[in-house]
Length: 107
Image (cartoon, rainbow, N blue to C red; front, side, top):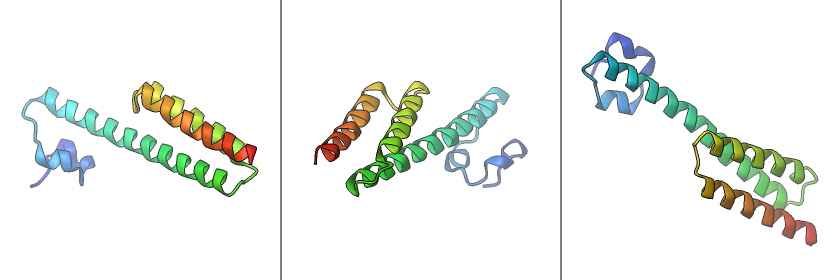
């Protein structure tokens, strides 16, 4: 299916190819939602990568684990503030990460 002129920058977007709005306001809303989707996905991916790096740093007992965990906690808080993850998810992720760090310090 060929995308209309207003949606050329959204090529490759699965949602846009499945749904084609009729009204002008619906077209704009689709553009906005796709932009939000892309932005949220980037933040989510960055968050997952930070969590993985933090866990790995804790496992290998890296000296920079404290800084990495602090950076990860900050990113988790920002993601929750923007509504990308829920507050209970935020608390659970922070708690588990902090528990791992505390256990590694004791050993």
